[in-house]
Length: 516
Image 1 (tube, helix red, strand yellow):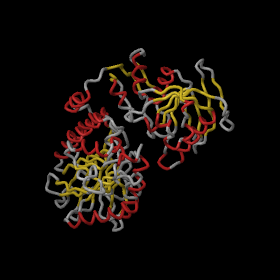
Image 2 (cartoon, rainbow, N blue to C red):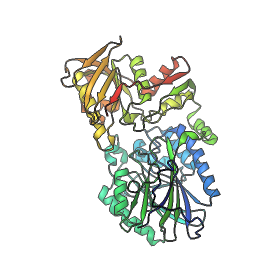
Image 3 (cartoon, rainbow, N blue to C red):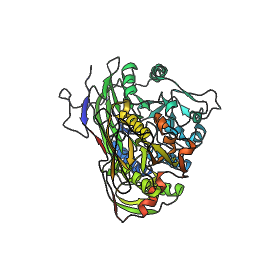
Image 4 (cartoon, rainbow, N blue to C red):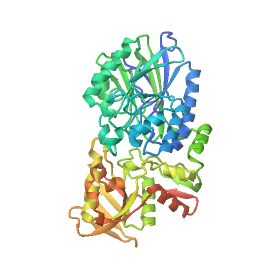
């Protein structure tokens, strides 16, 4: 069994003692550099910087006489705003992304609209485990099972794309698929094995999988399907840095190394995976660099494109400081969540505010802040409501979400709050809950015996109002809805920022405590 020569871009001391440097003078090796992204989630400010990163990766590859591949593992689009998604297509073209596997959020705008948008893309759109009833089904003539990319130095690479097997459970409404079905995990693995063999029969021995299945299934694929060299993952939003044997360096049934990697979420990071293949297409050297997108300046052409499609966005403030976004956005207090929830509570005159952690996508960097910057945090465009909620339903919702700390993939994620502070133990059990009224007086709530007759006014969005993420206790009858609003959290936050002294700051205040 070959042990890869691995060089860590982010942690040079974490090198396996068993490995040796590659033979850079070996003329039989093929040098390949892969620029990869996943789960950008419509973050336009990040797209502007990612193009600069893509251009730099291409320049470095050319200097090193390496083939350069630029690939995406899905969820570039999100939310259903046609204009913002049009910007996403322009990003694919300007960044030179050669292939992308569709994610679940590409279907937020419906399959038909997705097809219409992608007609303007130069990118190969991949979906091996999507099934189309007939040629008239949306995307049937757009999506490929796999594609072949020709490297600059004459090498050929087979690229396959797969969607999440749990796709239908990750959509607001299954009808957006418009007749398209998705294979389950076992069928996906079976067909993936067949697709790899098909590419191998064409003489290809360097095969890359663009997967939106999530890391757990991607590891399973690596050990059950032979012939894949690299799995560029997505869907589970994991930041996989460097190369560690047994974690993201695995071996196929035939003993060949497979590298799995992923660049987190919201375009905050991207990866450059440098490889050397031998004549048989086996990886002999690998270097996985995962980098912060913010080290690059926005691309001028992309900025002009954004303004042409969306119009120029007015500046509303100047951000002096923002606390770091947590590494695990589903299970930690988020400073932007604190800021936004407080804005909702203040401007909509509520006792408390609840926001599901997954609703926050991205952040805003310090410096001038525009309306578009704030809207980019909330791409789902959910409408808000003010409701009456009793103490028991509130406690039950916090308890259910608290269990995310010990659940698979940390889902659905904890509730971000305003007007409340609470404590969870390491397993996610709710141990303390305090309500702070508008006179700043604190009132302890008994988490073991909450009062079902005591009510609060609460603001949350239509996703929670419909019982999303299995939060059935947050559903409200019409009599319990005080007011429906025709806007999402971004409008309220923008109005709130305009009232602040400038420059302003964004901090977390430890209103959510996790006991270790």
